[in-house]
Length: 253
Image (cartoon, rainbow, N blue to C red):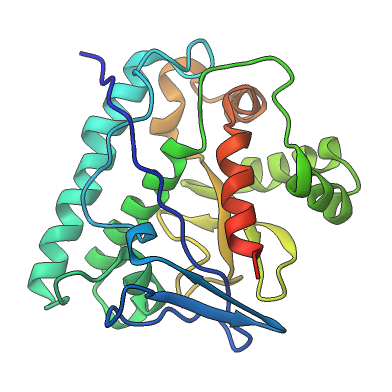
């Protein structure tokens, strides 16, 4: 069965001059952080909750880049499991009601392995679904994001090559990310398993602009062991409108 429902957009935070900071939930402006010369505040409604949001397209909408069966299993089994297990971990570990996933990630070293794996898995997938859409022609970044990519990586093609290398060379399961670091500079990084750059345990910390899932379950039914083919094709379904909007949210003054 195809899921035709649509999502409510939620964005979040920038970075701190002393590292990643996520404020508490005492007010409606909960996700506040500072980088040199900047302060960014995003509303509470933009934070990631513990429930899955409906896919913004049908399971078959990303054909022939990602097949319908992969999308259905990925969303209803893998991602649903992260949401379920995150709720269990939060209840067992006394996480206050209303806490965002980002808050947990920013201090994930204080929690259990179950919390780390499932909070990371849930956040990563909630972002992943939003950064894809059905194929369209001339599917490339525009505006401020395109300018920033050219500045950081020389060209869009240069960016794709570096990103493909990060995604393809990630040993085992994990993710490749385009992030904004504490200086609002774009960087490409990768993380193992369901880790992400928000985590206080991340080797390179930053705010994800988007991420690519390179776990085998994300591509194996169609591409088998050919991860490079999956990475190469993924650009056809990248939702640059959403990614651009997210980028602008993260850098706004």
